[in-house]
Image 1 (spheres, rainbow, N blue to C red):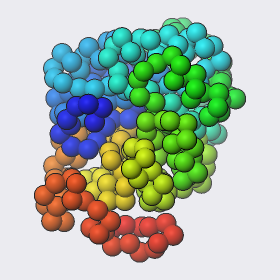
Image 2 (cartoon, rainbow, N blue to C red):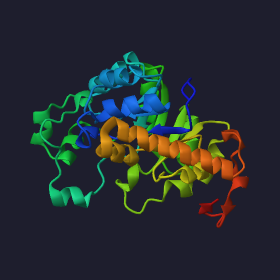
Image 3 (cartoon, helix red, strand yellow):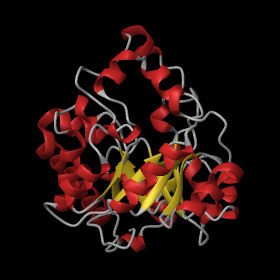
Length: 304
């Protein structure tokens, strides 16, 4: 994937604020991904710079990184992130399409959420003092463009970078078709962890129709709800090329830093391999819809 073999079809999603889970944050995640042999997404809300994160992974093994990007009010700042990602060796931009504004997150309102003291967002030029001086929602609104669109964003990105351009936050076949028409390299089927718009469908339920439109025209990854090797197997059988996990990486960090993330990845890797064996698949390419029992054709709930 992205020009490099991976040990199994999984990528760590570009989850932000990882230093809340462990002081080493994204540095630990990057090293763990490199040791296990999977790729990693870097969030614009990372607590370390893209240069530090990519260097951490490459210090222990071969790894590809991709850079998650928001549409920003200040194009110069957005371009700066792109240039830094390029120079750090990132292979793609994951443009977040589902966040013109933040969703209503009641728990954050109730607990007056702010990251702990000392946490900064270097990729968007927010110091630790800046982070403490604004609410999470206020800080996001200050830099994020609420008026992004296909015709505004994709041609501009194509004009400024040769990295692959993927759209993160796709949930409908129509948007997959638009991604194809605008020349995107891939789509990530994602509902932002269910934290943006309440009652959006589960990503696994929209995957089959999206994959049908994408087949042979554009690559498809899925993000959200992957918690086991069986989940991975089902997603691949329904048309995804790769599964992305975010929360499990944060749980691993909270448990034991770098070793915790590595443990989580290896658990999923072993679980996925066992599932393939029990389903009679010798290679990932042998996984297909025929491997599943589909209960409903209008939004499959798949079980092995």
